[in-house]
Image (tube, rainbow, N blue to C red):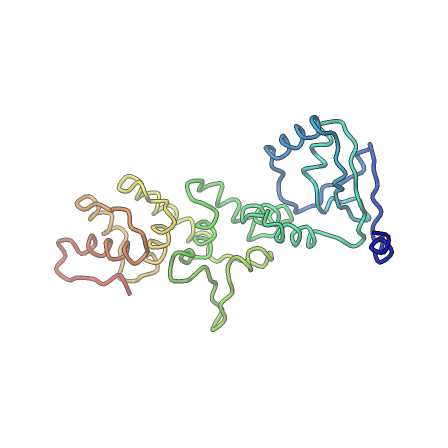
Length: 259
């Protein structure tokens, strides 16, 4: 054991303080989870403050441990912390990616709070269209199908395919036509009275693809739904086949919507 300590190097000093006002929440960090804070408050009341230090930079911005800090404030307790100079929002995101804690919504909120315009527009879009999940909202604002469709969660730039998840989490996602995205959302909402599964991701992906198909007339499709019924399908291909049959019902000139 003595040899082990001799071969180790002390890197950061652990401090303890009762003055929790010295810490700052870093701009762009994900919104705190109230339920997680309540759990931590209960743990502090039951077990006391454990030596699990939060990480701050030289400005006392919290890099990791904002939930522990908020729980400590609610419990009127002290907290342990270490200072790592030079850390910023980038390290916050890297830590959370590695811990698999951040969701697409967390990244959207963080970049929106920083004033990144596409993420601000996306946040406004999600607040107007609460029926749809964040992934489908991103797809609509990118004006392309979701991961369950043919685009395979990708974003095309010539011959280069960049995964939407990576681009979105890096803060470089730009979206496309947000007005067109709202038109797509409005059309999907119009289908609600005909099909309860209108917000299923596979169906959303199918419809986003059809909205881009020059052979597809949405108004005509609505008329056909008064005579035919949409049923749940397990894939985009099955939905397209079903919708093609509905679209061509009593139609002299059949139209292919699958290609």
